[in-house]
Length: 115
Image (spheres, helix red, strand yellow):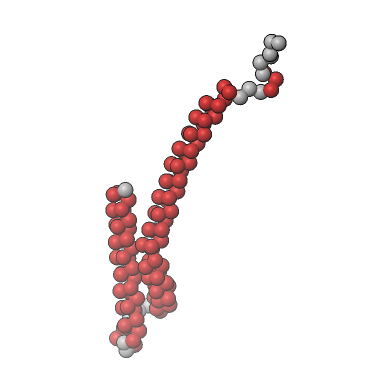
């Protein structure tokens, strides 16, 4: 479990760093748009300015990634726990069936009474 926790922490840190980089880029583009055209906007390729909404969307998605990863991890943990419990139930049922098998005989194999 400690390994999963440290992996989750690492994933969260990576997502935070990526999100911060995207946010910084978005802020830089925003500041450059507000500056005079001769200073900043002339240097920015027009296709990069067109991608500003995509960058902001990416920032939002990356901001949600730690919660998504945490949720997926929780669901996987529950699924693994359920699988373990199902295996236990299956084993118990198999033991019960094998214990009851000698007690149940088909109707054509019932012993004949000697009256």
